[in-house]
Image 1 (tube, rainbow over the protein chains, first blue to last red):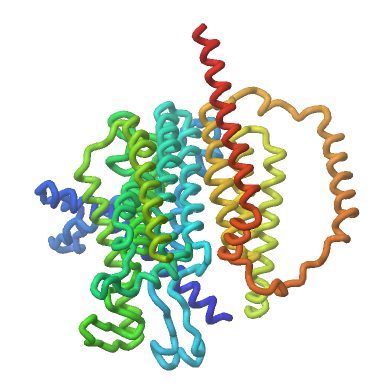
Image 2: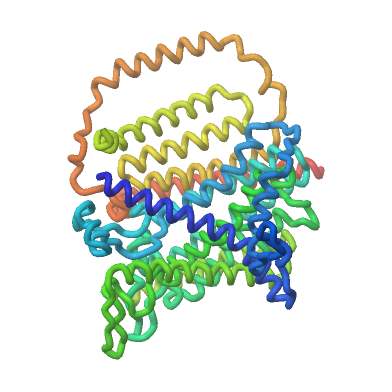
Length: 379
Length: 176
């Protein structure tokens, strides 16, 4: 029983450090990628000087994240005279916590058998094996949507309690936009649920480990390429990033619903946004890109279509799966940042029209086609 | 020591969540300001979700949070935010009927406790057979309860149409 607790704590620690790590790295990636895309040098001002020497460590501007963090911790924590101080103080946490909780049901690796990793561990753990996921729940995908709905309340609470017209407008926009796009998000995933016949994310990933037509990996994006595009678009809108960043459009609303927040409270909003990029990356990887699966790889090693096979020890399999998952998540994150620096911002009415008159019908059409196809193939 | 703690951890968490749900439900009754009442209700729903999750019906927990918090409460918070009712009644004293109300509530609670608590069948723990998972839930939902569900949707549709009609009527008055 203590062994189970230790494993759970290790997984939780891993998940939190991955999310925090992504949150920090992505602030740098966003700057550096913008610089690369617009042919600038970019993000190279922050440095650490080794004391008593003239050696400056720049490291491609990686210290900018550290500088940001210090700035947010050391700045004055300005407290406006709000109508409801309690709601004002709680709102950043209501935005931040659910984003972390969503990761609890996402499988970030295959099965871990401690005894096969290192023989002395076997004495303690026995021959138990653990799926690499914090909470193995049969309602996985539903939990994801349940928690992501909570952030809407946080955003509205922040804007309302700030006693600022810009904040209130931002909160209004955030509320309407997130409600609209959450609907689309749910409908795009229904097609996948029809195909895999489950909402448990772990078994969904396991079903993506085979191949289609002998060559293609059986990933969600192969079955549902259209849903994948719709899902990513709706997810970016749900995260309120350019081109959908109307709730915090700085040319219209200063910073929207978190205008009145300063120092680390504002940092929580920003950090939540960057962690959500990683969470969207993890969800997209899990649903559409086969999760931790590499093509032709199973828990025993590689088995290529030609008949060639490479056996791998358990440790190598575990490390490969963890690394594959992180790499895929990073690619999806980078793609989101690519979109952020490519597209111009919508007008607000266009955002809502886009959701209800374009995305929603397309998602429903995709669902109908999938349902008919699944019915046809099974019958 | 730690084995004992781990063996009872689930019970402790269950009581913790139940207690928090009770406290937030009471706060919902006692607080005056609309937004705080809504927040108390939200936290009550979330803690109830935790209770369901600990009892092993994770999808009911998910639905609890998804539907009640993610849909119903979001719209309530939205409405409170838009209307922003900063009227004075939220800061005024409690009504004169406060004490009679509390005494009546206590009597009612006692009557309910005495009348019903002892007659409740004690659920045998862990004797439920196969777990009530989402597959069994879906089968029951689509075979036995689909009519109830459809009737509820028709009711909701009627409510939406009625709301639209009321708005249109008001607008016509404003113009004329």
